Image (cartoon, rainbow, N blue to C red; front, side, top):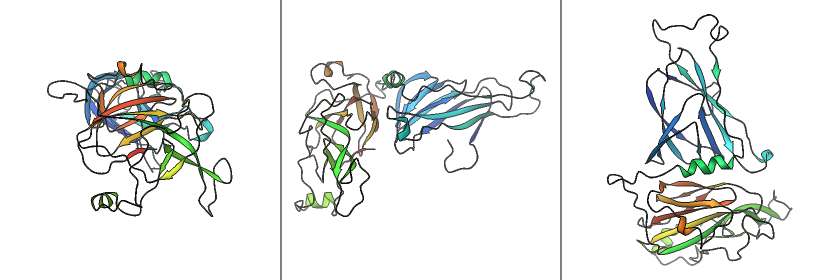
Length: 342
C-alpha cells in the first residue's frame, strides 16, 4: 500500500513465479481486511513467527501486526492488472472513522514476443480486476480467520506455551470518561469530562522520572505505585446493557510480576462507549493466544477450551469487538513492560 504518495503503487510480477508479500498494518487504530483480486494468499508467518500454512482469499491484520503471505502469479495476459485492496473492519458507528478502501495494483509484466489478447477479448482493453472484501462489520469472517492461526508446533519449531499458571490477570479494556484537567478544553460527553482509554478503569500517566531507576534506587514513592488492579475493582456486564462503570482514574500504577512466572492474561473488551476492537501489544515479549470468544469471559467454562497444543505466537493481538482474548507468556525479560492498547 502506498503511503503519502500521489500516485498508485504498482507491484509488477511475472506469470508462474511465487512471491512473498510482507504485510504491515501501520494504521493507528483500524483493523484491515486485505485481498488481491482473483488471487489466493497463503499465510505462512505472523509477527515473525511461522504458522501452519493456510490459504485464503482475504486476510485480517490488526494495527502493529505483520503477516507474510505467498502469492502465486498465475498465467495471465501481459499488462493485466489486479487491485490489491484494504478496507477497515469495525463494529463502531460508521461515521466515527474513515471507512474508505485503499488500493494498489498487481500488474503482470510485459515481456518480448508475449501473446496478446485478440481484438475483442476484453472489449479491446485489459480489465482491472477488483476483489470483493467482507462487509465492514463482518465479525463472523474475523472469528473464522483468527481461528485458523496456529503455531507449527514441531520439534524444530515448538510451541512453548506455558502449561501451568503462576499469575492470572483479568483486564477490562475500553473507553471511559475522565475529569478534565484544570484550564483545559474538553471534547468529551460534557464540558467537564473527556474520553480516556483505560485498562481496569485506570488510564496510565507517564512518570517524570525513570521507572527502572526509581525501582532499583528504592525511590519509587511519588513516582509510581505497585498496586495496579489485577481485575476491575467494580465488575459489571462488560458487553451487555448498562449500568457500566464509565469512570476512569489516572495514575502511574504498575503490576509487579516475579521473574520466571508463567502469566495468563485475559483481556476483555467492553461496550462502555460503544463496542470496539482493541489491538494490544506486549512490549518485550511474545505470547501465545490460547483462547478467544465473544461476550463476557467465563472463568469456569472457557479455560477448558483453551488451545495449549499449537496456539499462535504473536506480539500483537486484537481483542475481539464485544469479546475477549486470553494469552500466556513466560516472564523472563526483566524490566518495565508496557501493555499498550490503541
